[in-house]
Length: 273
Image (cartoon, rainbow, N blue to C red):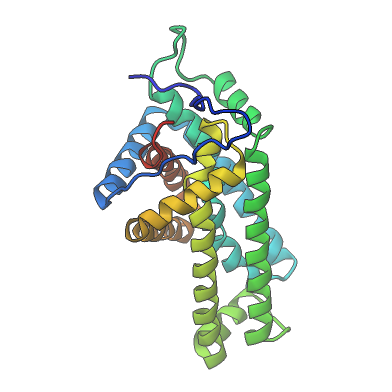
């Protein structure tokens, strides 16, 4: 059964608000299923996935090199952790691919082509998704500011280099306290961003809704499934952490699989209108 390109909103009397999108309960088995579907979509369109993942991998390398060159090593780790904050947004290209793979093209043409995929991604940012990009980007900058303040507060204003910074963090009491407080603050910010973005971004791509409605729907979904969503958030963080430890190389696999899985999770999370 094919899915429409955009779910049509039900007719409502003029002057009244349409009912909010209905969210559904999911279980741990659903998380396993969507990860399997994400891997399936990656295997079906690896060229497109590697292309989109490569954009972010190259951007990550460039930013890290700039931080080292400008002697800002204390921001390398927060920036790497920031990938978890913007992961749902940077997966937008993967939503396009997953949706196209759900059913054959109605005109009998190719399901995927560079013109279709890139054209759809470009058109996405002329709608409410552009506002969502602004909110997500602000969250990342807010986290980087917090990380810088914590670094100055615990480690002082003088840094001698990346190796010296690592040595101070792991061999001094202030360094260990910095790690605990910094990771705790990062976890709180990450879960807040996760709550309003986990399904809001694929929803903005798929439905004609405003970004406030999409964010509130995402928060209601997380509130309805707190335990399962905590597991999903931890799964995303663990997969991205492993990818970062590989020098970002692992993102070529992790980003596509998580991106496709997020699309399939959204399809299970929100009922059709």
